[in-house]
Amino acid sequence: MMALNELEQGYRKLRREKSFTAELKSTLADFVGRPTPLYFAERFTNHVRGPRIWFKREDLTHTGAHKINNTVGQILLARHMGKERIIAETGAGQHGLATATVCARFGLPCIIYMGAEDIERQAPNVQKMNLLGAEVREVTSGSATLKDATSEALRDWVTNVRDTFYIIGSVVGPHPYPMIVRDFQAVIGRETRRQARRAFGKLPSALIACIGGGSNALGMFHPFVSDKKVAMYGIEAAGKGLRSGLHAATLSKGKPGVLHGSFSYLIYDRDGQIILPHSVSAGLDYPGVGPEHSYLKDIGRVMYHSATDKQAIEAFEEVTRLEGIVPAMETSHALAWLVRNSDRFKKGDNVVVCFSGRGDKDMPIYDRWQREKS
Ligand SMILES: *Cc1c(COP(=O)(O)O)cnc(C)c1O
Image (cartoon, rainbow, N blue to C red; front, side):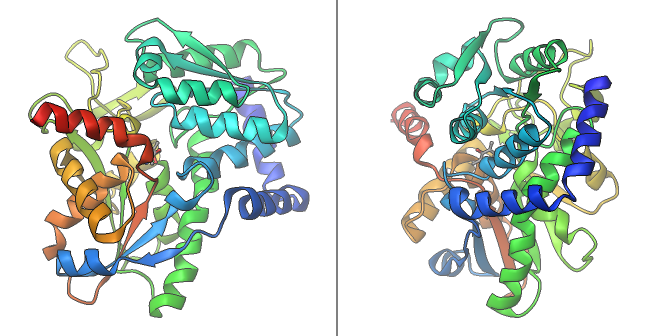
């Protein structure tokens, strides 16, 4: 609790300080490349035959996904709090990369905890993190994947809290992390509000985003929560199908429980053991989900649905060929759900998809999928 209290106090004080907000703003502009465009997907719109579809282009940020918004925010927080050593967890390697990137930029030593299983599956990301000067620490406990890497990072943090800052990668973990990550990602939704007014003169009819831990979705949704007319849809990974037992659909199929310091929907078995999630997209397979999403589900403000591996791959191909933009496999889940559910919207509705990242990193997955198919 001491570590968490110190973090909360540091954050509450700094987020109002001019020197902090000015530095955050200029780093987001010049290093990350914000604001990202709100792009009208004309051919995809014609293909889907329903609402007008817009992409909020987080794929165009430096490093190619929304994760950098959060790591930039947290490393500035670390510096202002006088912390000199950075640690983080990673599953697919995307958050590890975004953290290693900001550590290189600000010259702080960086240790990334990663499951042995993931190190093997995500070799190119490990090489990139090493190139950036980070140390990747292998975690062999438990299932040797993301949840174990997260536990290990939390252990390191409480042991070395005096000089160490733990940069968490999504709106998960103990308070104040879900709040801090949400606030740093909310730049997505704030820009979207402004850009929507300029592009079509009103707020969007609906927002759609994929859900792993839930940070790109919450970043998009948060500034619109009190706008009752804006519908919101969070799309989880249904893997091989919701009834297959091989999925990461925590909100659709999970039950309330506690993991890594927060109370949220989780997938676990009769003995209370976490069930390992499955998804074709490595960035979506966390067995929990942000507590604020659990709340938004319970109060009915956000609708949560899912898309399977196969549907996501199809959307990955379709959008690439229609728009000349390769979506991340995570983003492809949101796109896949929209393709199948366009009749929920009226012609002329403006629907914004949070285009969380680019799919270059997913070419090996796509390649393997095609080979297994043939
Ligand atoms: C990590 C990742 C996600 C899932 O994480 P959230 O916290 O749910 O946003 C989605 N899209 C991309 C491109 C990612 O890298």
